[in-house]
Length: 407
Ligand code: 7TS
Image 1 (cartoon, helix red, strand yellow):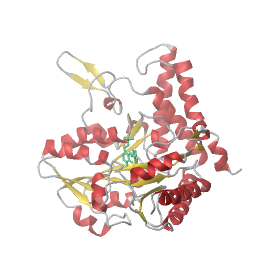
Image 2 (tube, protein in one colour):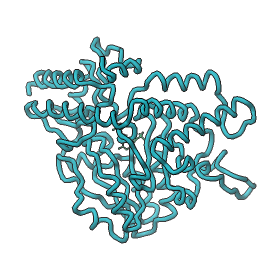
Image 3 (cartoon, protein in one colour):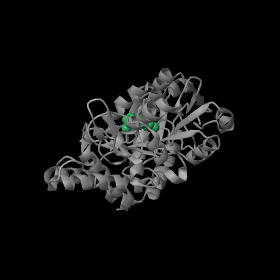
Image 4 (cartoon, helix red, strand yellow):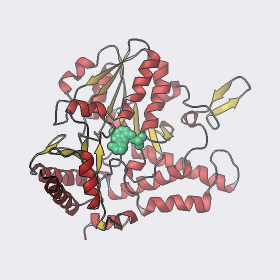
């Protein structure tokens, strides 16, 4: 048994049958499964140390605070932040982006300023900026996707990074196309023009090594649940200089230094952005997930993702009438497709009967879908606990589906 096969045993959920068939979970881009180490770390916290953080002097509160702040240190190390204060715990990628829009964005944007996005963004990296544009009078602009190959039009990037652009926000990996964007290059080109950058790392965190300093971004947001961690926890990285100049996100307990009846002063960074009782068990679960991934090796995971997706993409491309989206090579472990004229929801519904968990829909990429001329796609997304046999089974089931629909 290979090392990868052994790792599957760490995921109790994968051992089950669905509709009488062994479960093949190919929906990690929506959320990944959780290894025992994560489940046990959270269980241990609730059984032994549960208490609130940053307030009690008693022993349990001391332990909870230490564990919560240790999770912040671990997260800082995971993305190579300069210091732990640059890590704000959030509910996930979406909240991190909203935090930047509502704090940095509200303070720094004025009518006529431009927020540059790309055509492959998830709704969570579009809608907060639309809301901000509405509030501030700023405008949105988009770096185009070139076609089914799913690459961004880099030739026009410098033209688009004009003097009115104040922010460039882009995804590292597309959750529909599997494109891996050259984010360090994006940041370098934006920085030359004094433009602030935000990386949506929802699909890259946990899939490849991430180094915020090497990428050179100002902000980077990701979710714990897409990298073997629990739901409801994520992190926003921000360069300290920017975080210091930003106003708080929400008001409440823990984010203040002192409160008077009519005014308050703020706690230090990052606490001024974390109002109220945080997701303590979530942070502890995230810590366990990051340790778990580090023990496997993120470069190994990236290699595994690429090999498996490359293998599946090649086999799928031989199916008659299939339309595959995204780059042919150098792609992440996400494959979107249309099986002839069969509706994506039908593909996913029938695949479910064979024990396969796929996703069908617009994947929160409606503008991109329109650009590609489709309403929805079916999507298989792979992680390190998936294997070649599962990719083979996917292709067999897709053939069955084609037969079933007479395609
Ligand atoms: N950005 C990207 C690129 C994503 O893929 C997602 C979630 C998000 C942001 C939002 O993350 P959240 O954790 O805050 O919800 N993507 C998907 C998906 O592809 N299928 O379900 C969720």
